[in-house]
Image (cartoon, rainbow, N blue to C red; front, side):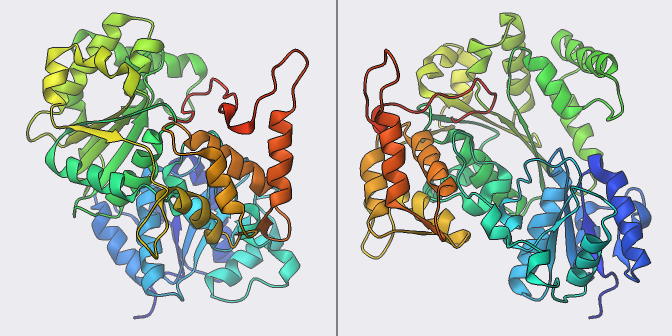
Length: 460
């Protein structure tokens, strides 16, 4: 079937002005791009339009801006990549927009991308984009960098995100258990030691599976950290301030909504159906409350923490279109189940994240070895003989060692040589870690996890 559009333009609402400028540049190059604000009639069902357009477009262009990928955009990307898997000739082309510092390309990064970060009107790059849309070679090799050379497939001390799903391995069994729980319940707790990978298995395992429609439903996903003001965090996710609002206006907008949640004038159970109605064709909402223990460790007002839990319990009753998943450090679990209503609702709703297995049936990789080898394979990076075994011996299998493993792999990637991670780099890192600083005791690299910054969303 002939393509009715040369390119489907997938973008976040925050980047719509830059994308529209690029769309006009593509028109100037005799291409017919699909931009939803040009062609989408208000009220149309998102899945219906997406299926029709993506089935007939000649390519998909994915714009990545400073704020990352938008929620609807992520669903478009999964559909595009599924189509590309079935029809290898369909280009899926990431485009980096000005201001993008961390491209977060993940699964997109394995396709040749176009870099407009320096100048949105860069004629040479726009020509490369036009050629890619037409399925033509991008040009001379020095015009476009090999994307695989630019992507680190490991996450250091940060959790894997949905955008990193292509590099997330070793947690298939836990992901399958979570998918099963989502089919049964509306409130689920993912519990494990600090550093066991709770956040990652939800964000990079479960969420991509739901986006792909593993259960036949269309999901939207919101992720929040409770932080010092959990009601504000919830309000900001469900009803973000306008993009052009000033700092004071944005704060006032969030505080007003939070006060409504606090007083009971507004409930989560009321807001969720309205949220879904604003996105025609979306059937369910997944709310991920990451680092649930922050209700104890960071939240300033105990009454707000209690009200936050009340709202979750009220909104996740039978028949609700909302599913809530909380990730929780195991050493805080008893702190929360002292609440009888919460303990009752979590009965049979807990997924425990245990240590990863090194051993595996003959002919298969163990979970730990998958974590080491598979991401490197995705970006065509290898290991010197015997290095993987040294890494696994060094890290061990104790719960909470994943941040150390990812940190080590990230540092090895930074020191790679000729497309390989090397013994020399491993030995340099071990020596640097063991070298005593003034007044410090000498300790091996595996003695402790490297110090983490107090950044929300750190390894968990």
